[in-house]
Length: 108
Image 1: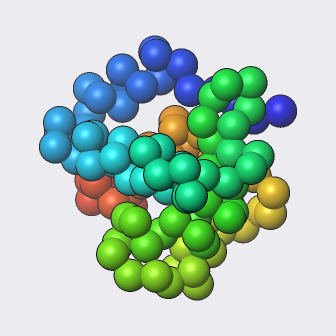
Image 2 (image 1 turned 30 degrees about the vertical axis):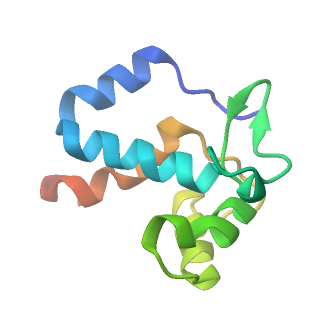
Image 3 (image 1 turned 90 degrees about the vertical axis):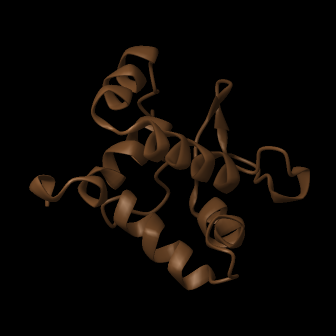
């Protein structure tokens, strides 16, 4: 069962991430999930009413985030966020945690 994003977790991320980057990460998650684009929504990308990202979200919707249709890059990003495991559901908190090393140098 996937761990869910809580308001406490998200507020913790909001404390250490600059507002512009925080909103850009949220926007990227929404675009990958298919919010505001019914054609981009993927079956299975919701668990108990909580948005999660599955592999198909990354391969099918990466074009809405980076502006280029590159399913291979989407697959690599998914594998990075899922620690190389298949069939993992990526929550918003996991999405933030995975991108943390790209925000600050000391976390690398």
